[in-house]
Length: 303
Ligand SMILES: C[S@@+](CC[C@H](N)C(=O)[O-])C[C@H]1O[C@@H](n2cnc3c(N)ncnc32)[C@H](O)[C@@H]1O
Image 1 (spheres, protein in one colour):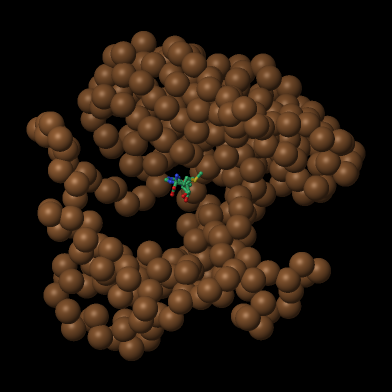
Image 2 (cartoon, rainbow, N blue to C red):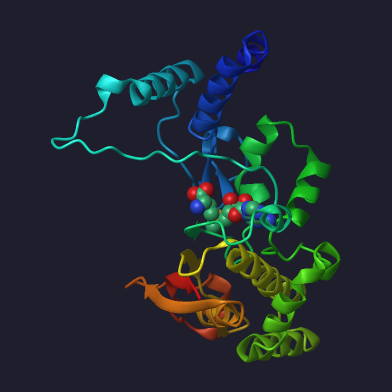
């Protein structure tokens, strides 16, 4: 791979981007790891110490064969006669795609008000997943070092116990309405009081949980505020999210966020719930028994 990276440096910018994109696509497949929920799991061939269950991710293709297959796939996707023609072809309007790099907390306030027809989003869940771990391979490839990882995690929406509180009003004074919506959300405040109380009694398995849960909902309130600002009247927002459970208490993320959304300019049209809920962590099950948690898609509409 080192040889490949050195060689693509001599290529023009567009060829370099396609090759880097292909490399990002195959990175996990050719590695000794696999994304597994919150972590990267190490295959036994990595030489790393294994737990009681040995993990074998199956065939690990060579760099050359994986790269060749991926480039072939890209070429076939882009070749017109490879795409199936419709029986009754329609003129499909293609929108312009703009990828914005950065945190939504910085980017959303820069977008034009009342200018979007729809938002579809899959934000982090309040579940302690650390995306700097999940994407460790990709981040290493683009040269993010240990310090960079820590900064990156702090910039992301709070969903790990390591996140420190963000100064939301300092970031954007207009967010006071969002913060007051979170402040007045009764279930959220009850959950926060319960978690603080459990913390004081030493009953939480991590003392950062109340701060994380608070940060998550207050930051999400600011995101919802910005989504309401940029959407046109009557435009829908769809969000996928799961409920979570800490210290035995199920947190109805769907209800809390939907009520905050109502305060900030949305109507809740539907909360679609998957027929099979999510199980609990072994720690929660051991201490508090099993309770299925809702996995949902919220459909809100800008009023
Ligand atoms: C539940 S995952 C959604 C993944 C996505 N559906 C996909 O298939 O890649 C949440 C994503 O939000 C990203 N994220 C976290 N904080 C963010 C922020 N402040 N701004 C933009 N994205 C953020 C995470 O890195 C993660 O990729």
